[in-house]
Length: 307
Image (tube, rainbow, N blue to C red; front, top):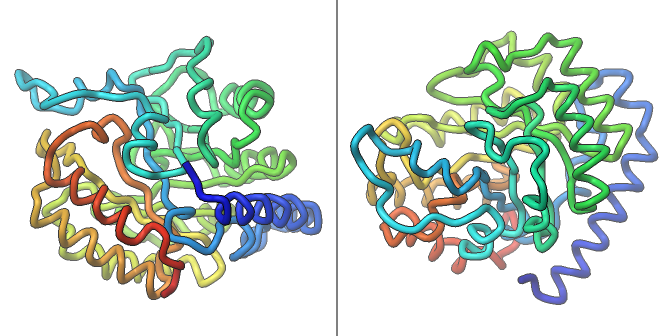
């Protein structure tokens, strides 16, 4: 899926990633504010390299509509959704306990992707320690492109919230295995609260989302505030919904156009490090939100970040 110059960039990026992690192995133990992976060594120079899908099992599309409604088209599995969108990276987040562990050959699909991240807090069975073990001992040997773990819905769902000490232990375990830790925050559910700061300092990357598409007009300013909150050296991924779960339907066209317009500005200004498009199973829908996202990625994917 990637062009030759992107493959070369990927190899360089991976060498820098491993080298940087080895050089700063002691930094994680100090609990400093800066990511131990540095601010430029993980992602390549293009916007496409900084794009992720938020991946769920294909069957979860039927849980995304209002009661009595049907999913308005085809559904696809995660890696196929990435291919259709032109996105090289996938956040593998279990919802509704799908896929259940043990998951058979489900992870075979991800070998074609550049990077994957796995949910350490998610909607699947197992403790956070089980999920760390699965990521490190099962997924990573099968998928060397595993680059990290995700704390999904961390502040929004009380059952998924862990203590600061637990998050530090999760981060340390991942860092020991050259993996990164990312976390989810919502602008209109969680907000930006001072008590979040120690957790975000521990994590290498914050993903920032607007849950209600009606609030998208305020989200660009919220992303800028989050950038100021976490500081200039942390990776900040802006979530881009194609499906509005509060409406049970695709994000309306005008809202999607607005969302993509300010996403472009935030990338140009280097406020956002990258984007996560959500959800993977919507990639086969012939609706304005998905079609606009595909056109946007095709138009800007090969542009350099910050230009």
